[in-house]
Image (cartoon, rainbow, N blue to C red; front, side):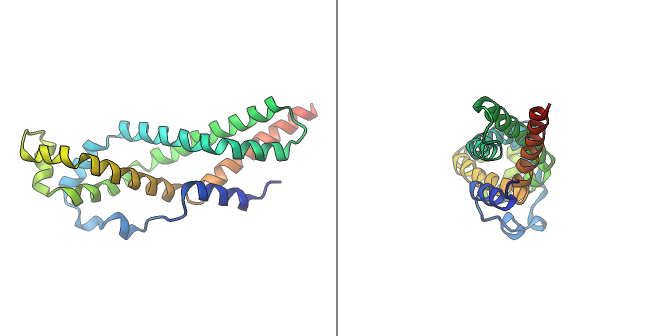
Length: 189
C-alpha cells in the first residue's frame, strides 16, 4: 500500500509548511463590533464559497499528476483510461470534501477577516462604510482595496493551510484507497 507519510509530505509541500498562530491572526478581544459587521458584508458566504471552490479546484488539479502516478504505481497493469478515471474520481471526491471542510469553517475565516478590517479602518469608518455613505471613508476603501485584496489572498492561503494541515493527505489517501479497492473488485469480477 502507499506510504501515507510520503503523500502527506507532498501535500504539505504543495500547501506550504508555515501555518499562522492564533496570535498572528489577530487578537479577537481587541476587535470592535464594527469590524465583524464590515467583514460579514465584505466577505459574504456566497463570495467565500465561490472563492474557496475555485481555489480548491485549482489546488486539486495541481495534485492530479501526483495522484495519477500513485494510482499507476498501485495498478501498474491498468489501462491508461482506467488510471485516468480513478485519478479523476479521487480528485473530484477530495475536492468535494475539502470544499465542505472550508465551508464548515467560514466563521473562522470571518474572524480572521475582522483583524484585517481593524488594521485598515477605525470603528467609525467601518460604521460609515457599512451604511454605504458617500464619504471620504468610501474613497479610502477604494484606495485600500488593492492592498486588502493582496493581504486577504495571503490570509486565505494561511487559513486554508490551517484547516488542511494533516487533513488533505488523509482525504486523498482515503479516496485513493477506496478507488483502488473498487478497481480490485472490478478486476476480480
